[in-house]
View 1 (spheres, rainbow, N blue to C red):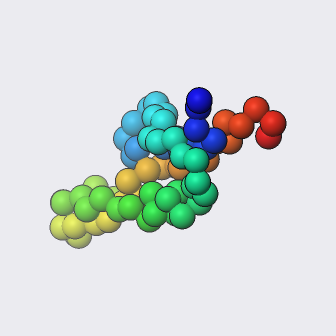
View 2 (view 1 turned 90 degrees about the horizontal axis):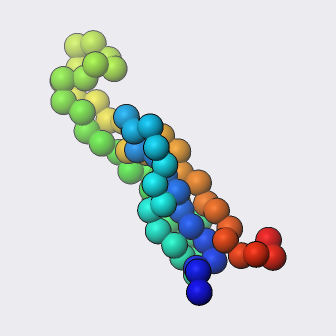
View 3 (view 1 turned 180 degrees about the vertical axis):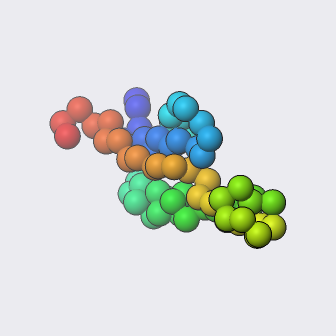
Amino acid sequence: MKKRWSIWVREIGSDHDVELMELDSNPEPIAQGLRAKMLTVNKSIFQSGRRKSKVPRYSWVRIVDNHPGG
């Protein structure tokens, strides 16, 4: 049987979506943690003069309800 929720993400720099996991319990705390994940980029192209910058790991995180009734 398929799990109730799926979490789909898109990584920074990627052009496709990936199903990261399937869950039976409340997915919101996990999704919030995924939204908070950051990557450290050395010699930043985003801000001149900075050697390190932090950017989000995922450009978006989506929760999908797989239950047929809604």
